[in-house]
Amino acid sequence: MEQVFIKALPVLHTLIEAGHQAYFVGGAVRDSYMKRAIGDVDIATDAAPDQVERLFQRTVDVGKEHGTIIVLWEDETYEVTTFRTESEYEDYRRPSDVQFITSLEEDLKRRDLTINAMAMTADGKVLDYFGGKKDIDQKLIRTVGKPEDRFQEDALRMLRAIRFMSQLGFTLSPQTEEAITQEKSLLSHVSVERKTIEFEKLLQGRASRQALQTLIQTGLYEELPGFYHKRENLMAASKFPFSALPSREELWAALLIDLDINTKDAPLFLKTWKLPGKVMKEAIHIVHTFKQNLNVMTMYKAGEKSLLSAVKISQLRQNGKLDEEKLKDIQNAYQSLPIKSLKDLDITGKDLLALRNRPAGKWVSEELQRIEHAVVTGKLSNQKKYIEEWLKRCGQH
Ligand code: ATP
Ligand code: MG
Image 1 (cartoon, protein in one colour):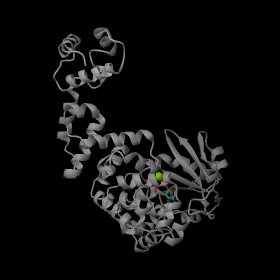
Image 2 (cartoon, helix red, strand yellow; image 1 turned 90 degrees about the horizontal axis):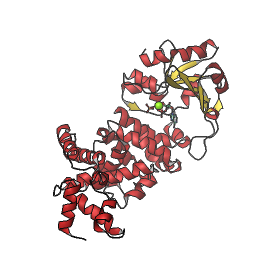
Image 3 (cartoon, rainbow, N blue to C red; image 1 turned 90 degrees about the vertical axis):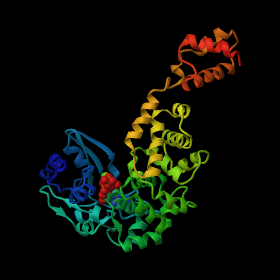
Image 4 (cartoon, rainbow, N blue to C red; image 1 turned 135 degrees about the vertical axis):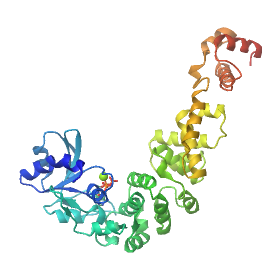
């Protein structure tokens, strides 16, 4: 048993000693069987949320009505979820109402994919009622039960199936793929926020190329925000190695470039994905920088972070991989710029007012920009006395 499970065993034992059933479930069991890095360790139990709260000293109620309590144990947090079924699905979305039950098997049955529907006992035995191990061995993504039924219950599962393809490098079972092709339009009932989470994970997966191609082949891409007329661009985008970009901003910037969405149309596109304003702004700034020829002025305007993001995207588009040495060179070139922002100028607007003896106006910021340009491009040294001399020579503009 891996260290992350051993560390979580006291939580399982506390539940078991109080007379309940408790198991590790979901992604951690899958990743352990695959000998892959294990993410969050989730726990399922037949104890009701109130009972879970009473058994542990430190808990957080993150959705008691759905059965989930977070248990803090040493320096870790664990989601402990009461066995449940989701019998009432409304509008192809996850239900608002759930029923708590006492059967592990019934709980596992409501999970989306066979690979995600395994459990592990406190002594490390894997319980696999739906052929999850066999599907992992065959690298197959398959729903628990009939795919059409499962997608009608919650249409997000179609996108999740393709997201796991991307992360694990698996293929869809023929029935699962067929059902996605058939039921794809149901995805329109799912909230954008849920789609965005899965789509970002899909892009960052190691097999994003196959996953994006499957999105196209099944037609599911049509139900993603802003993608309807983008089939060809998306096909081209599938070749981009998104997994080499760790940040959300870079990911969306690369996508905008691949989809040939210009900086004018980008805000609307990103808004349909309901991205936070900060992410949108930075993604668009990276695209803007990407489109410029690199010189000291464009480097200065970009700022270090966006500059490096734009160069990374450019390298990945050209060579499919990063050139760390060149990145370091560009970073050094940025570091040796005489100033990094207007604030670094050795002269202020106030100084200009005194020097020119003119009332304040637009001319102040215009003149500061002229000085900024001259300093950044190396025509003028960033020292007050030289700047003042230069201003006298240049006269008043
Ligand atoms: P990751 O490592 O990306 O977190 P995960 O398998 O833990 O992968 P989550 O999205 O965190 O995936 O979901 C946890 C578990 O909950 C899944 O393994 C699956 O059993 C179940 N699950 C999540 N979303 C759904 C859904 N829409 N329908 C059915 N079961 C789901
Ligand atoms: Mg998880």
